[in-house]
Image (cartoon, rainbow, N blue to C red; front, side, top):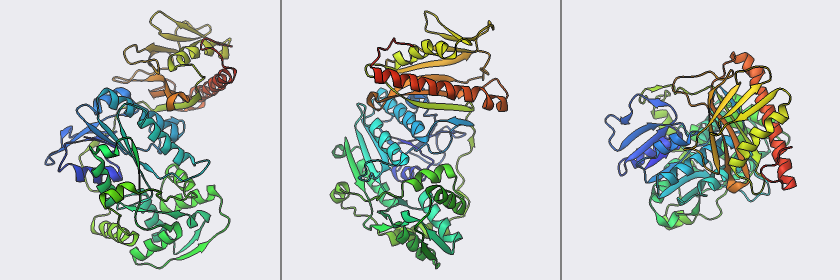
Length: 470
């Protein structure tokens, strides 16, 4: 079986639990010097892969029958990242689902988040739901486990709680601190995930899980202080703007704002499991919060503050630019039709500066008027393209810096059952100096994509045919 997100908080602990009874393929973004079986660790094999690449995802899942998906792309994945974390999550999940189908897996397991009954979800919770929908849209049955806040050593939520309690003798608590939550101990979620592996009863089903205690975040902070053996004064503050709240938590805990903001934005929603049918079936009600916190604190105090040394890693050679934009997909259109409509639309949008040629092999060349050499050459990949996904490699051009072994590429793909199309550029290395690129080509790309999004939106509203360009 494969575990995607193997170096994360849950992934590391899950691998330790599963490798005694399963042959585990641990997937990680960065290359490792111990390719193959881990020395002295039978049942474990590491594979490096970039899940933004469908080809890498297919290679990563080779030989697996079940895969556990633990990935959330909330931090930048390149030197320059253009796009929302939700769109990054979506494209990675879509690659994983496609790869699982092609490799013939029999089950996918996704650990997502509890979803409140709300008309409009936060971007973070909406992204979790989209990932779940995407992973479950294929032929491989999905077991979707929805959990709330996880309590355990090295977990991001627990670290934030610890740091708040450690650094603030007096805490000003915003309104979200009075929202109910249902934390779950790490050891409980590991047991539940293991119980789902190869369990047909969970195929195609949602499993909401949580601990036995429902409490507010205020009460959880107080419980953390008791577990740490310190006294803290908690003061409720009626007015505390979301931006100020994000900045406050980020500054006080040392956690990147990119990670804090989506999490804090979701704290205003009650996170309580509505049907814990799987736990009832397995007789696993969960660990009380006080006990889970005591275990996490004790584990942290027993270990060195330094992260345990693992196998040596080397930086993965990827391009410095990733750009992903979500666009409306007009009814009746496919990703293939969007891709070639883009090649027809762009010269008109950029007129009179840009002209585009498309040859019999569907290779697109973009020229600046008066310059004979193309700015960009997009070579269509016939073998890696399908009607719902079109892939082009950036093989040449004045704006492209060729990197040995590089795979700079542009793609258009349908997502969410045809609700939208993602336009993505991956592993692109610009030839322009970095500062010049950031102030010119990078901004022009966003401007062009925004124009194409508006045009596709107009095509969708007008019910236009796929070959309509105006």
